[in-house]
Length: 143
Image: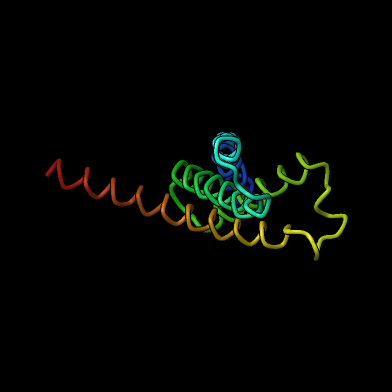
């Protein structure tokens, strides 16, 4: 019985940081995409630049979301990053009306998924590491 309660508490403890990180990642993605759209209108960039720019925006957003969610959680950085990446990819699919899934192998969806998961897990690890570094700095100041 006790193990089941511990799992429920852990799940509840993870939901808030995950949602905050996911929202932050979505906002960052929107801002980066707006910046890149402005760049494409100012500079006459070819259409071939769309995919690298979209991957960059997705990577930056996932890194940010994973970093924030893991930093708020304070532990399990890779897991928080992974879950945040899955959440952001799901939001990306919903925003595109599942258009990427019509021809999954031919689309850039597997590449976007890989970039988003790798970036969000990296952000998660960095978020937990920066939390621990800040905690160490604070503990040495008070001595």
